[in-house]
Structure formats: structure tokens, C-alpha cells
Length: 114
Ligand SMILES: [Zn+2]
Image (cartoon, rainbow, N blue to C red; front, side, top):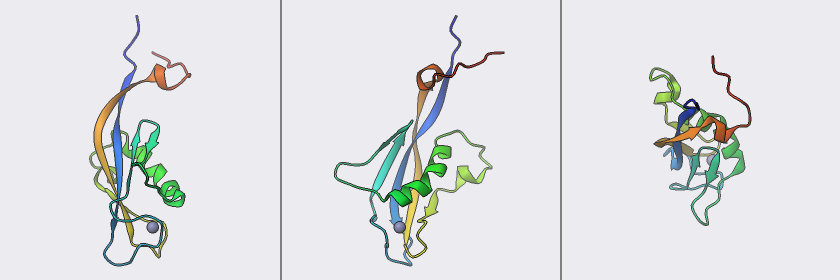
């Protein structure tokens, strides 16, 4: 009998906003966005996103996909400044919805059941 090996992850949307203090220094503008669903990153058609900003966001958004303690700052803090100190970009991270995944479909590593 197959045990339930499902788990849930949030789909993530990251939207660029301006901090109202500095202009943008990077190649992103207010309203630009990208999405993360499971392991899949996507952009709206025709839009790009700076790889240096993306690299800075990856550790945060991959944690934001997961259920976190409501008292943990990662649960409550939704805006992250651009890593370029000269840029007024802020990235608003939203948990859009939850999706169900199955361990056996996302890894070849066998799960040990006690
Ligand atoms: Zn920037």
C-alpha cells in the first residue's frame, strides 16, 4: 500500500516596486514581475529580469514557498530591497496559492517510513 507522500508549496509572485527614495539603477521597473511554481521560474511574455537580483532572491523565495512558523520573520516580511545599494528597487514577494506535490514525483531519493 502506497503511503501519502504529498506535500504543499506556495506559488510565489515577485513584483518590482520603487522605494520612493531612489530611482531604479538596475534593469527592472515598477510592475515587472516573475513567478515561481514548484521548481519552475517564469516571466511574463517579453519581460526580462536581472540575474543578479534573481540570485539574491532565490534563497528567500524558495523558503517562502514553504509553510513557515507564523512568528518567523520569513512569514511576515514581504518586501526585500534590491541588492544594489544604489537602486530604489524593492521586491514584493506574495504567496499566491498552495499546490500539492508528491515526493515520489519530485525526487529519485526514496523516502524512509518509520
Ligand atoms: Zn535594482
